[in-house]
Length: 141
View 1 (spheres, rainbow, N blue to C red):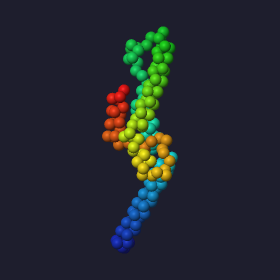
View 2: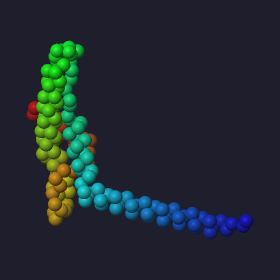
View 3: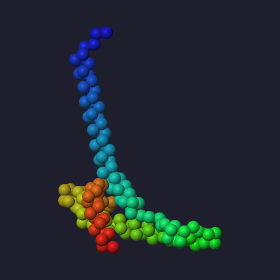
View 4: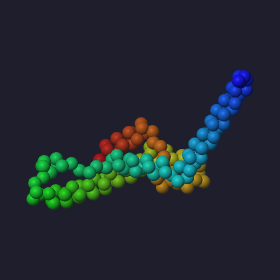
């Protein structure tokens, strides 16, 4: 078995190059598809909503429930959960209306004026920008 070493290296380098090109192409197609469907922006907004939302705390109701108070406790928890969901949604809306976050999308920056405005907002928010915007909103409350 006499293998020509340079030919073997050429084949290995060629296959690596083809694999690199195809993986970059697949990645770009996936990015275009995600951008077109705004899936990242939608998931980011949902994640921020979940992060800011809560479901209530049993300690707010005086500790362990008794059998008689179980139904009223359940009703109180459901009402508190609904209030928390509403507060979380309002906080999420305020966060996305903040000038720091509203200026991130390509439409608001004027980079692509023909593109329709995203209904979900930016697909990525830098951590510093998110923290500053959240602190600004929480200071107002």
